[in-house]
Length: 299
Image 1: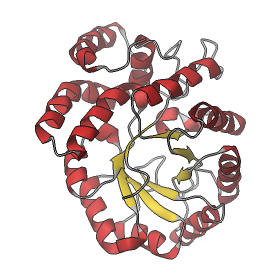
Image 2 (image 1 turned 90 degrees about the vertical axis):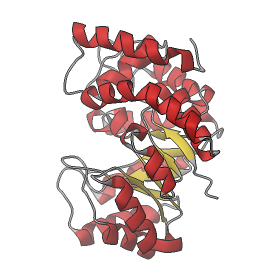
Image 3 (image 1 turned 135 degrees about the vertical axis):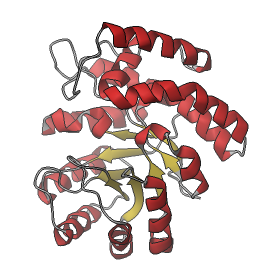
């Protein structure tokens, strides 16, 4: 069984009211993820607003996550770059500070051609850590077809895992696993685990959601993975209205939940498309009240 299995949760990047990186809140957030039972950590990636961070801030996030984690769980460092050179620079830094694996989308500003994408992941592979290829949608992601994803796994030894979150992700997972065979050690889903039941049935080894509901996501996964499907579906039904709310507001919702749970000091965002207004916050009150009995972590 893969060592990378379960809920690999994504800490958001907390900011102060002035918009600076809030290192104290980030440290609490990583500890929150661990105490909630996360099987692994992933940062900084899309739910971490990585595109709004400077290169030095990205590396500081990696340093803090690695330091607080201290090897307790596998840590997958986000190293997506605007070019091969930048991605490799981030990957080398991640390896030096103790990351266990890398996750990267193809270059996310000027879109790369297929040969350039192969060269990009081949160069990342030379850093010496396992790689998760992140298959995500436009405009930031570069959606890749199953045969191309399988080719990456077959031709590049370090490409061992896939995070799949494009349209019809479960079917893509099945196709890639069939085409790549033993060259691919595992596939994880995203999209807050909304499709986890069919992904798990198709052989997914885990999921990578934002961290605000880590304890609930862990309970769901562990029940499902142990064959307690009725329990897992009960937990999923409790979470689903909140997951639907998050789908609309993204990182603004994740951060407001983390703030309300006493994990981070503010819900300030750099990359959220819209702030939550009074009516949104009132609805969030109701949604959180429904899931609060399931929280295993309390401030």
